[in-house]
Image (tube, rainbow, N blue to C red; front, side):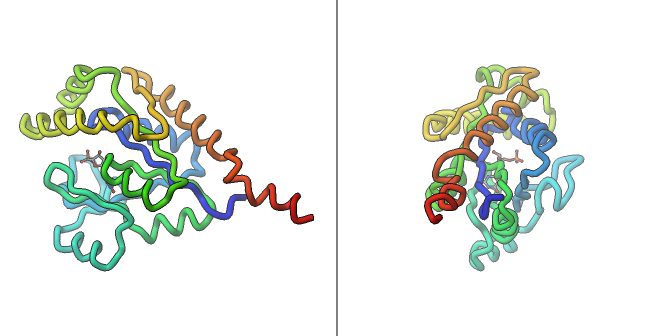
Amino acid sequence: MKSKGTLIVISGPSGSGKGTVVKALKEMMPELGLSVSATTRAPREGEIDGVDYFYVTRDDFEEMIEDGDILEYTTYCGNYYGTPRKEAERITGEGRDLILEIEVDGAGQVKKKFADAVTVMLIPPSLSALEARLRGRGTESEEVIQKRLARAVEEIKLASTYDYVVVNEDGGVEDCARQIRRIIRSECNRSFRMSDVIENFTNN
Ligand code: 5GP
């Protein structure tokens, strides 16, 4: 077993299908940890506190930042989103890989702090497909949809800064999850992650 798990960052614009793909991936690889973020945005219908997010006030969030309890964070469409540090450290400390489903700004912070983190950007097949998905969800106002579309374009421009890019075709959730599983498995065999195993030979 590895002594320390790897951080696997999965980003993708709102409507790229990230949430569904991550769920399918977790079913394929139940051993993966899944970080639950803290946010100041209100829960959407059906979302559960402690499962989808930890829903907190702005004051609470700012206190968490001050206390160093947040691994990375950003403001997105007027709300704070961040990764609670302790839980992430507990899971990776057990040698389990941890999925962080976060946006581009946070992904950059993680890569800076943890050079061995693996970053994957999920993109829709086209901008029109993305718009259709956002509208189809029916959970956001027109103003929020426009904000999220504008942000999506900015995020996709940063795809080349990621280690991997995966296209989520319509109806392609399982396929996408399989592609990400392949990435995770290959990354496990990178020689620098096998140093413990290699040392067993060189020390004898
Ligand atoms: P949503 O409001 O649609 O749930 O999330 C909005 C965006 O925030 C998504 O791109 C999502 O990946 C991102 N996000 C969720 N949690 C975090 C987090 O802890 N940190 C950062 N940087 N982004 C997050």
